[in-house]
Image (spheres, rainbow, N blue to C red):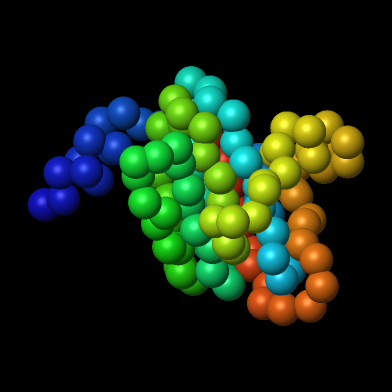
Length: 116
């Protein structure tokens, strides 16, 4: 038995797939605090999950699944030194739930995200 899976089944969540990130080269996207349970699946590429100190960055690799209670700001980025772009500003400007971001050539990262 998996206690986490049992708990999720009891809650009967309904997920909404709302968008994602298509990143090329160096990129970063920040997310404001909100009272949501968010998920993200990294299809290809790599990125870091960064949160306010003292928490160290967490490296995400292909097929990783992230479940995060977004009560504090966080960012997904290829480099912790990059100043990330605000996700709400980017999606409002493009009217597209998929964020296409990055500069130059380099590795491609594809993430799919949503909330419960």
